[in-house]
Length: 273
View (spheres, one colour):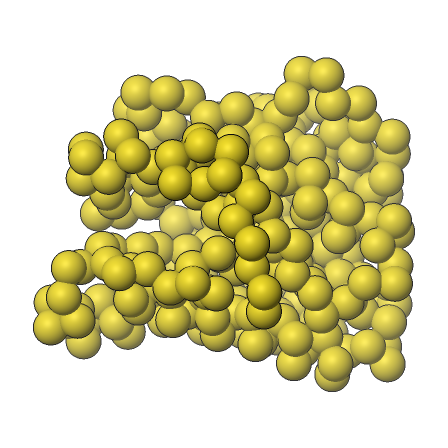
């Protein structure tokens, strides 16, 4: 099923920003381009970035309603937001949309690669070539395409933040192709960070654990949803509002000496890799 499920169809609305969170201008004057920014973690990152003073360009695939809702949330923080419908698995479409963003905003300082799809299958034999290709084209090719398109426009002190996952480290029995793409994202992050370090462009990643987003009820069975996140040491799934501050940190000058790293926001699961 598509991850672009309408936010209002979820039984429990995710929390996108903590009401007590106070912005301190960490991203004032910056423009952030966020793929998959219309819902889930991407929506939360968009709102947190806005509260920290950034203008936001959101890429989304299908859900116009979600994109407009997120745009309104960003604008309620007093920042500019534009939304662009595109398919990140299409390199020509990515090149075109980045040009549109540059025409509208004049700059891109932060790229957040976040768009992803997942389609659980109980056997490797059930993963069709079509599913395999689409998962890789969206989840890792899209990251390559966006990084390539944005890179010539990132100045010194620009940054790229990739969304990985805890499953890149421990795997997942019914998300075999998805987990493989998340592993690729970790290696992509580490390699690109080495390549861009001489230009003072930092590349890092965030590896969320079980986070309550629209992707969960849209792709898992009712039984899986009921148990979601309960295996963690904290005994519950996280909220997008608990992940997004990691992106703020990596996007800000507070992390100026950090590159090639992955921040694990997973409810206490120990990851040694």
